[in-house]
Length: 189
Image (cartoon, rainbow, N blue to C red; front, side, top):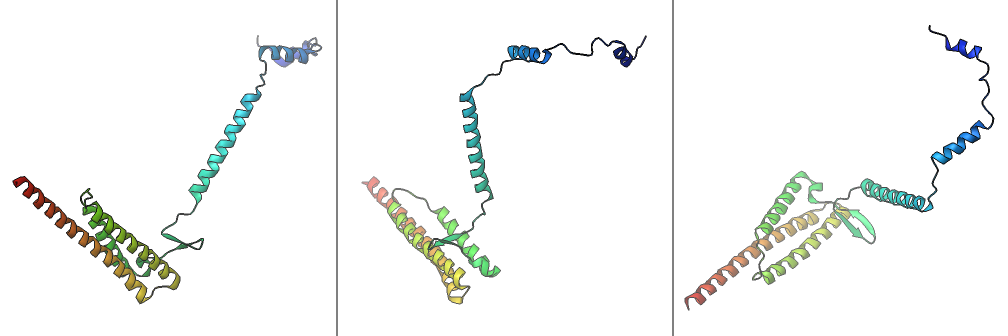
C-alpha cells in the first residue's frame, strides 16, 4: 500500500494556505520559550578581553619575529654588529676559542669565600676592564677591518686575562696556605 506522497498532496487541496498571522504567533511563542538576554556589562568584558588578547599576540609576535642579535655594541645610538677573531680566519677562531675556554675553566676552578673576597673582587675588576677593552678592540676590528695591530691586541688581551686568572689562582693558594698555617699555630698554643 505504498502511496506516492506527491499524489497525496495533489488530492488534498485544503492545506494549501497557512493560517493568518502564523509567523507572528510563532515568533511570540519562540520569544516566550527562549528569551534573548541583553547584558551590556558582559559585552564590555568580552571586548576588553579581546583587546588584551590582541595586544598580547601583537607583543608576542613582535618579540618572536624580531631578528636575533649576536654580539652587538652601541655607538652613538647606533647598533653595530661586531666581528670577532673567528670572523677573520679559522686559525684565529681556534686561538680565540682556546683562550676563552681556558679563561672559563680557570674561572670555574676559583672558589669564592669570605676570606678571599677582597682579592677576588680586585681581580674581577681588572678582568672587567680587560673585557671592556676587548669589546672596544672588536668594534675597531669591525669598523676598520682586520689589521695586524688589532688582531695582536685582541690576542694579547686574551693572554692578559688568562695570565690574570693564573695569578689569582696562585694568590688564593698562598692565602689558603697562610690561613691553614695560622690556624695550626693557634691550635698548638
